[in-house]
Length: 316
Image (cartoon, rainbow, N blue to C red; front, side, top):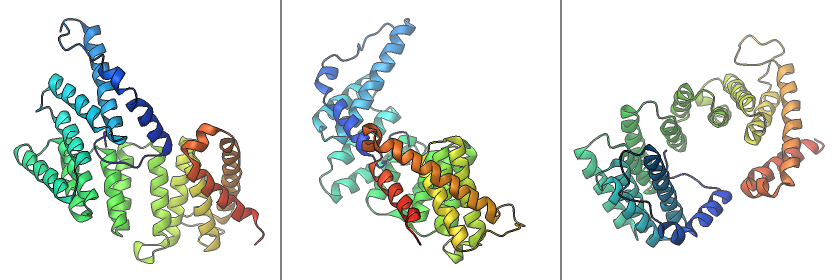
């Protein structure tokens, strides 16, 4: 969520952050000009780009544990935009969380967020930091409430809806999680990763009878995986999910010979989709396994895909 809500990072992200943080002495040694003439649009643009790089460096330094350089970056941003700038306040909160030594220090950060929000309830960067901190403090119910407040203020934040879906799913609230991802897709209908996430959630819920008609849920799962690979034709996760979803429909006999529900495809269609997905998945795995860059960035996904392909290759 705009760099202010924690997210899982993969190996390539860590390496990129490490490479960037190693440049901190050189970048900070040539700081942006603070007295640029306001009449020059080019100078203003260059200065904006420079401060954008300072913010990226700040995040990279925090990620790699270089708190000293991160503090220098934060001071420079605060000097330029002012300590009361909302984005600077969010970055300062992120810094305070990063250097917190114990639970008490994190609780102090949370108290500071509450104080700021009591004065300005729609300080969005601080609202996002509060959500992230509540999650890290293992307080999912409070984090859900905080996210709902955030979405009341900014209902068009697709990433926030995705975060809310994750929290609902972690609490076993499948239907609420599905609703949240459907809201995210209304905002970002061409986001293939959100379609795949919704497909995964529907796939999981199709095994829980309390969440509704399992055949219909599985069928909708297939539809969303199909949409994800339509939008991104080499999306490994989308093809992986499509193989699983079609397998469930075939194994559980959810797919009828003559469907009456548009959300539940016919058995012939499901078989064709599974064959297509297996072929594409095998091609993607083979091509990426010999590409060092792809292997480094998506090793776990490639290993899981290989295992799935081996399962289908093995005689039953």
